[in-house]
Image (cartoon, rainbow over all chains, first blue to last red; front, side, top):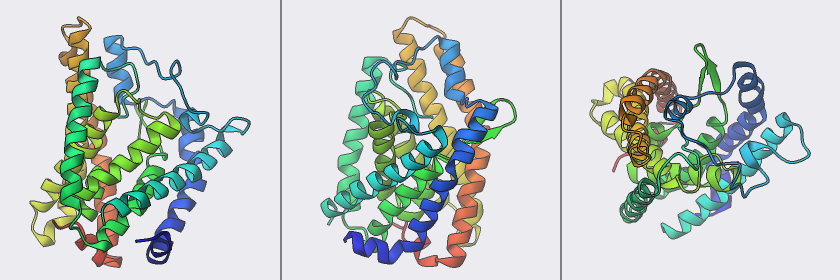
Length: 99
Length: 210
């Protein structure tokens, strides 16, 4: 199972995925800022006084789907493309192991 | 539902890593005999779920939601390959974007890659063929609700370690209650995608049988 087979068999699904990545800042940046991103985990953690240490031990320049030097919306799209590429590369490696 | 670094105590982190790794070994053995068609779907599905998780939908009441995709993965490629679909997503999110912690990666894999995937699969398979769209809806709903509850248990255990004795009374209702509500949307998306694929690409839907 190779990258070529993957592209031949699932070309449309991959193109659809990349199209979603291009649209993603509407939901992941614009609407999130408008409504304030807040999920149940944050509510529980706040009630327990738990403290996130994510920023203190950060190791990646692409923290939280941002790219240094790019506006948030463009960084989000670029992050989407980088993430999709990384998932596909790791996925193809996994398929070799699963042969 | 991605637990960041700092929320879980070391014992819970270690225990959830052990469970996730042990499960990974079993899943690897059980996934090997799967068809090439199902295996080839794993990277594509993982890429699609990765992007779908970037689409946050704000909801009235000050919360927001994105698809988790555990049930959908299990329905399309079966639970053993479904584990690897979610593992790929969670690994890239944590390692490349620090979305979800590195110390809590085991817990996140347990919640979204094991609990959500297997709950989704078992519920979906419990329905006869002609009721499978309803089964996909319930699979999505229950997968998110139970994953949220297990996440609540992990937070509760960690708060016990931090001398916060009433942790469970906070974490279980908040995580279980909210995710039972948000799960309705997870269920609706799972059922919609399943119904679309069953009509347009039935071979993909059949790939989940183990």
